[in-house]
Amino acid sequence: MSAGMEVADSLGMLRARVDAWKREGLRIGFVPTMGNLHEGHYSLVRLARENADRVVASIFVNPTQFGPGEDYERYPRTPEADVAGLSAAGCHLAWMPPLETMYPLGTARAVRVQVPGITGVLDGAHRPGHFDGVCTVVARLFNQVRPDVAVFGRKDYQQLAVIRHMVRDLAFPLELLGADIVREDDGLARSSRNQYLSAGERVLAPEIHRTLLAMRDAAQAGQGRRELEAEAVARLQAAGFVVDYAVLRTPLLVEPPESPVPGDDGQRVALVAARLGRTRLIDNLEFTLQGADS
Image: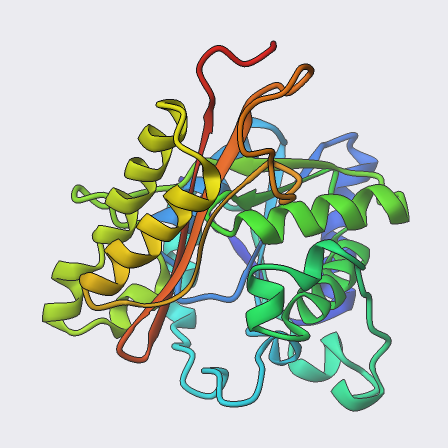
């Protein structure tokens, strides 16, 4: 546990603390969050601690990544519980910037960061502008915190891929780490959105993980991509989901060949986004095809 974790709500305080740590030669880890934290977030803090001397976690509900009709206003805000949880997880500093600090010229006049290509598929196709908002706020947070290492969860697989692209292209001087998905006992990926599920929907929700496992097994057995994707969509629809996508991709989120070809390393990821009632859930599963080139 981090004794006496500090909370910064001004850029001056944040930079003074980080500057002092850097003068001591300490390695800074960073975990960006939107608050309403759960065990999945705290596992990111613990991974950051393993790879840094001091850990900063931000809590900021970013308006620019929510589209029309999405849940910015109803997104749960639990700052006191979040601060207590971060401290218990070993965080050293919570960065809680006001909106006017993050967007000093207002969101309408804010400089935007856009990553082409990879942001236009999957979640990007279903949530236009979402990843522009993500990249915009993460770039600002990187400039504010100036971490040596930043940790993101693999549950938001496309987000991690987009951030990797941005970091490489803009030469941010930091290391990116992807943390494993934290799951409930029944396989449901932990998410702040799970609390929106009704009791009946919560019973159905683990079908997403079971579908991902079935997609993996089918791919490893040699089933064609299009067929297994169609079966995954049908399975989820039969369980009561409205499916945005259930697809098989390479780690770069491009469509793989129907069957392995020479030079194919067989690295695959199955990804699902589907809705139960008003709640949109995402999950993924990484795996390797059997007999692929290494």
